[in-house]
Image (cartoon, rainbow, N blue to C red; front, side, top):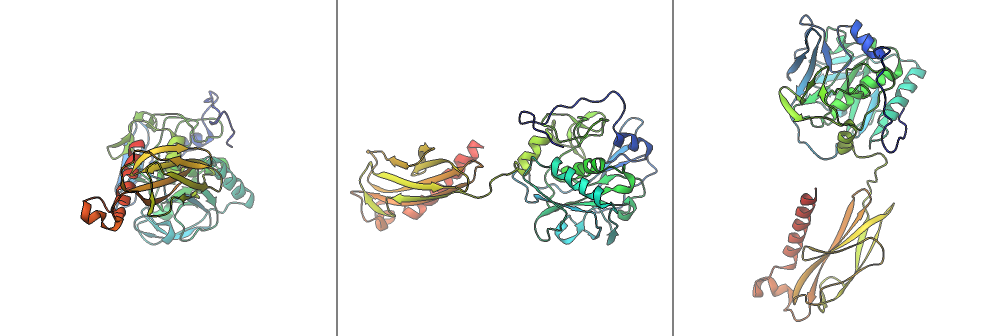
Length: 402
């Protein structure tokens, strides 16, 4: 279970008393619990329209993952609901879409048998999953979310149901760009795992994290590892090398996505933090009015509100940031040397989670010609076009800040 420790997970020590129960089980089986960790050349991965990559270790098993086409990187994932399904499913082959029960893992229409867990074991597994993912902006549910974008975590019984002939503990597709696979269906095969909710939870968390673009790493206390560990794993806010038993670049099929990996920071970048506010603030310009005729040095007044709190209100004149205020009343006196003509003012409100809202207005500084004729008779930019230029400038400013 996650415990607060100065804003970060508490450090854990690797035990010298022996390997983690998952690792002991894996050593007894041809397959380590994760993507498709095959135990020798005699075991074959299923035929698929997407390739499978084997990463061998000296004298040990081979690590096999399914490579799916690269997706665009960056930005918050759309699939921020994680559906825990232990009832089984009828899957059809194709690119991953949990909403239509389509999976790149299966090679034909296949009925997947669900995990026949007791009510107590299932409740403990769900509780562990909620704790494991509690720091991130995801919804954990065991009720089918239907058309809502989601990752489906399928607690199946046997790997044979998906055409695998070996004792695999879990499997997930993995993007060639280490990016999010929206709508992925990932698997944990409970017949091949220790009968402990915590162990099954850790395996499934690794498979889900693969769908969000996380690789294996050499950090024993993190669920993305193959290393032995005595204790409950949780995602660690530490930089770690990628690999199974030896260090390698993070990525697949010879493509390096990153030099190392911090599970918590990578998941935060793709999911956002828990309890994130998704509601944008509201903002309005109370004066001057649209196309009002004003004198240079005119005042701008605005109101802003948010469901939690407004962090700041920024004032722009013709695309240039003039002032940022953090407390109401939100008022500004403009430059008394502002040239005659049409000017665009923009007020933008931002809340604590970075949600924004803005309102824009054109005003006419006294002495200008008819604003409707400015674009034709004076060669000046019409108000509508000027507003577009302001918005472009704001977007460029944000990109530079990012």
